[in-house]
Length: 403
Ligand SMILES: Cc1ncc(COP(=O)(O)O)c(C=O)c1O
Image (cartoon, rainbow, N blue to C red):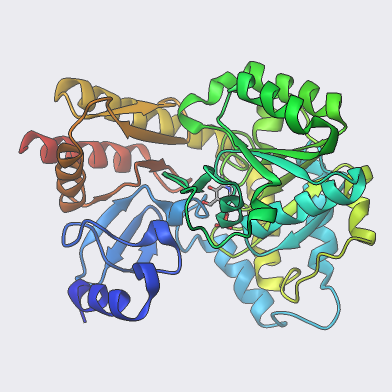
């Protein structure tokens, strides 16, 4: 069975071609329709073709595919059991570790996906404040599509037409762009008296605006008695172990961590100050799989590795090598894209203003064909070594030369 076979099956049996919209390949046959296996920083598709991978499962793989010590921890927990009728000791141990590494975390709980953990924080904020309105900045998971005009996917704005969201619910959710203080002031005037929370995910390409934007958001939410919730699903375990709150030194009330914390196992953490987290003693958020032990075993090991090895330093060094190298190629070959954040573990590119989308597509197809899996930029992981980055850059340069 090859890529073509699976591409047809996915199209036939799965709406959108995948359960994760952003994983649906739109540039086949150059882009892989499915990935069969991964090791370190490389993956193989159903045709047996290898790619140096910068998609990292769209974020969760922070140490590398099949990373030995984490897989061993999962296997050893598998011998004891996956999930029980009572919490596993790991639930307490990982919650404690989270409070030690995340600045805002006095208490923590677990779910499976980032989006539902953000929804939990919104519920706590509404419970504690008695307010209903929520402002969301950036993509916070598919629940984000509650707000008309919000990012329905990382690179796709929602429509204000038919959305499947009741108007009464949509009217409580508002969206503002990253660093758009003017829009926030407007929303504050209109809904401040009934504002429960501001949820913010950084705009990675323009993250350094956070130096002034996070302090602004801290003051803004305090003005209205609303909760400040950081979506650290991408930034946590990458920009710093404790995410942007550690990096920029502005502590939110609650935060969500997910991608990166368990090297691919499905786990999200919602954590924060006791004042807000204690809402969950009464406001119900509950899921059978919240404390599932294989993911917690992985998270415990991942946290240990991050604390004992310079993972963050490595991610920054490899990120600078990769995205800095990519920037040089973009300039040299006048590619139709522009990158942001080229010195970091993650980077994203956008089409240059006025660029022909056909050129961008051609460039991406050529890069996939050369054996590099990108995602409008992407992530480095702890298994990318300098030689992998250099090889990826050589493959990319070779590919764009042919255009
Ligand atoms: C910043 C951010 N927030 C939230 C989410 C949603 O997480 P999940 O897909 O686990 O629900 C994502 C996923 O892409 C994300 O990148």
